[in-house]
Image (tube, rainbow, N blue to C red; front, side):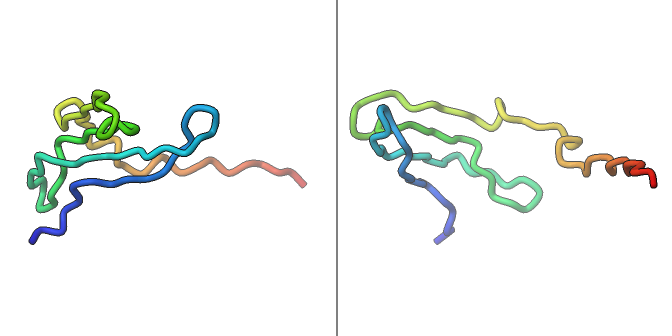
Amino acid sequence: MTYLDIRYDRMADGLAGAPRRVSAIYGDYRTVEGLQIPFLIETGAGWHDAGQDADRNSGAECALDDSTFENPAAPHSRNRGG
């Protein structure tokens, strides 16, 4: 057993505020620096019940540069005078 997520469902407001189920299905897990990362994420609102197409995102499309995860520059102190 891997305990990796394969599906996550949540309720969200739909048209006219009516609640609807939004699902994310995870797949194509790969090991990246010792972590299991899903390289395929399909999302949709009720597509599994209504026959609608899911939105598909693959890891190749979502590649981020290492600088994305660096700490931002320290904020400059304000001169409050006084």
